Length: 257
Image (cartoon, rainbow, N blue to C red; front, side, top):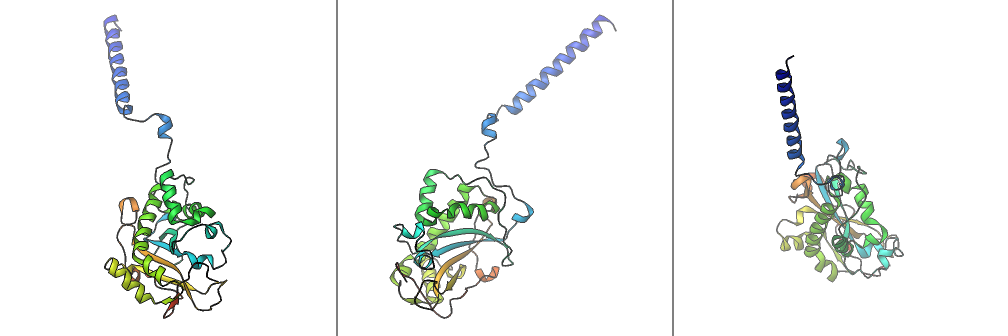
């Protein structure tokens, strides 16, 4: 090979290498540094085939009834909470009852500090680790990160609380019917009543053997961004109904025995 031809190939090789270096530099220019890339704190939890679901149940507990049902000595029941309704959890559900996804892979719970304070106000069970339990068993299957998961739970919980808090407070110690509660919910937000189910049972520590309201649940579609809660659903459409309440049921008041 002549010297001129060799020089030509060297020149072409150098140009090619320079072009490749420039391309890689441009491709990586917008990437965060490696320590930021490796922080998946706010990335959605990985979904597996077992994590597919059809809708959510937003579960709210009647706190006085919960505390009178064998939990009087728990930390949340010795707190200063005065809310009749508190957050139990936001549950990914399937149409077939009892087949919900659970315990999906998820990073440890690490909420934004301001959000954690808001959550503790509506979820006194945080004092006993309920937030960690709900994230581990249910939240990781939602496909949302922990902050988004609990923000949506808070939004739904506040809506239900605003609709029912007054009647649950004024009728504490008395009885109501599911129809009354649905009527009140519809007055607050038309159509809300049909998205709710009521769940009752007798209290372990209660003197009365009549059923007490233990939980209110709302059916919500997972048609929001990234599988978040979206459209409110009529619970009959997703085969969910009241349980154990009969024609009427009692509303526990603080200190019920």
